[in-house]
Length: 346
View 1 (cartoon, rainbow, N blue to C red):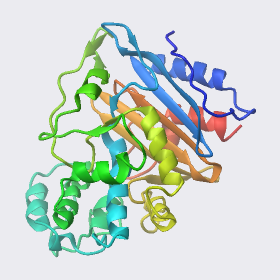
View 2: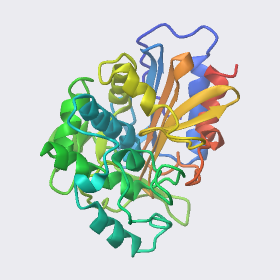
View 3: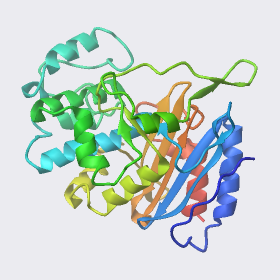
């Protein structure tokens, strides 16, 4: 069992055995066939645990640490949501204005609908009534705003009206409104036109998958993507902990915007703006997962009423638990269950 040095930046809650929690997390890592896993726990805006388990790179036996860099896939969505909400606060963007007023939504919608994929099902392009809020809350299917269906393709396209409204590349906006004010110095955006910063590229944990014989093998190079809002962030658990503290302390958004982020969009929709939101045993859970098939996975789970956050990043798809597209069921993740038992349901 490979356990890197523990980082404690604040006194641990006496009732939580962090050593036992880490041992149990290591057992889950091995069972899920994850080569390298990094974890950060934040309580009341203080980092109480940050460490790595296993290997960031198997070939050279480089241990995973709290500073290991990963592609976080869809955990980028809460970061993108901050950009949209901040621009709305500044009066540069209206989340409730039809996005056809900002960009070529109708043309994109029709072309996407013709693909007849699981993500284009029930997408109605006329009349062009969709707003940016619908895109960012995954309520574009059917009558806009009424039904939740997780749609990473549409969420990624949400960067288009944001760029059209500001005349600025989306990645530049993420740096300006998130990375810089949150002091996320080990974070960067990456897309077809924006190669990864050299120092982060050298520190990036390569992705792995398990072959038919049960052995870890390097995954192929990831497909290059555009400057979209659904992904495109490379970072560490420590930087995401900084993001978490900056968000909760009001350095990134107003209280009104933070509440909007973490409140279901309408009715029983289990999503706010950039976050899944659900009730579990009387507690509100706010979370997002990340999954890049046969490459990376991530889980960012908050219990706002308790000031608790867990961030997990992995260099395989082992954190993924096949959450359905129309529901929020983070409790089905064994990693979430471990965190909730240790910190919430004790």
